[in-house]
Image (cartoon, rainbow, N blue to C red; front, side):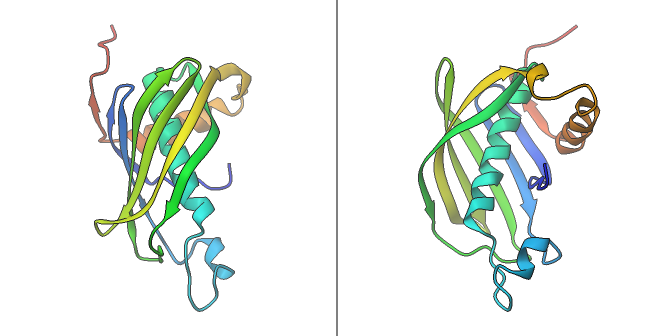
Length: 159
């Protein structure tokens, strides 16, 4: 994946909610063209922030046995511009889990202002279909970094 947009996961509530942050930097290559002189984070990347948060929630909750796949985005609204220097608070909350689909409401805030909200629907498949053995160590490293110091709530105790 070219863009890993989440910088850190702050909290995961098992199969229910995930909170993450993203620090928006002018050095990100997207701002060379979007828009020169008035850098604005593209709406597609705001949706991708939500998609990565939802994916992380489902994959962490499955103990990395399932790969989450975004299948639908509904009711997406872009309410404010996001500029370099903003810190985004990203939240996804499961609203229904009617197998094989999981629906979530997602929000992105900057400085306590609602920037984006949308409903996301995911499905999941066996992780081996999507992460070949060569890629798995990279994804493990990404999740270790994302989850460092994260608060984990309601996870089953493993022995």
